Image (cartoon, rainbow, N blue to C red):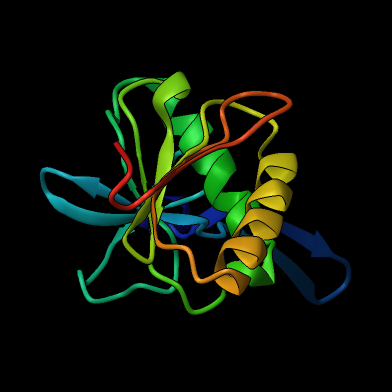
Length: 160
């Protein structure tokens, strides 16, 4: 019955003679909040829904992708995991969007950052460096595109 509650990954019960009962419970760990037609749900690294949550919770990245497209959902979750591992994003509201793995982007501080699919740790590292330079020079940005291997495209506000 515990497995039906959503929060539990696995449960095992073992009897150790003479009088001991050992219960091991492995809990699922949420990595993001998925937007669904039924409201927001916590999701784990495998894309499984854990529990419906209040819309005001913003401690995790929010994912808004087609939930039936497994490849896009898993790409968004991998990006969310990478974001959670990097303190650069602490305290920031993050929205991850996309209709396919190639169009995955995140919106942070009102700026869209096109990420595409895969190699997220390297792309995040590049983003941190770019943002430091832009902030130092007080440049206002419309978007950053990190989908290309050896270059980043930065569109400044007001650019044609």
